[in-house]
Image (cartoon, rainbow, N blue to C red):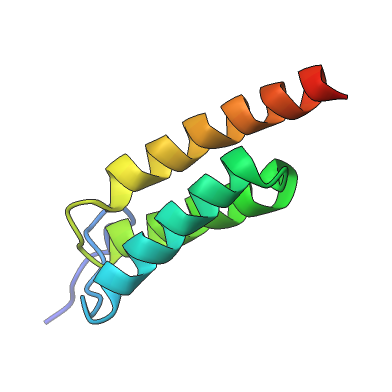
Length: 83
């Protein structure tokens, strides 16, 4: 029995364990990107952590990723205008 090539867009089977913690870490990194002037570092890392939570199956993974991206943009804008 031969099967065809694997579908590259098939959902990933990942364990949802720890996804809630990843969402919380992403949210904290988003706030750090906004308030602490760490937007160039904390923003992309927070977005990556949020995407990992999304892939693990947490329902808030993608909304937190988008929110961190927006907080990063606002944090960079605030930093630019305060200097």
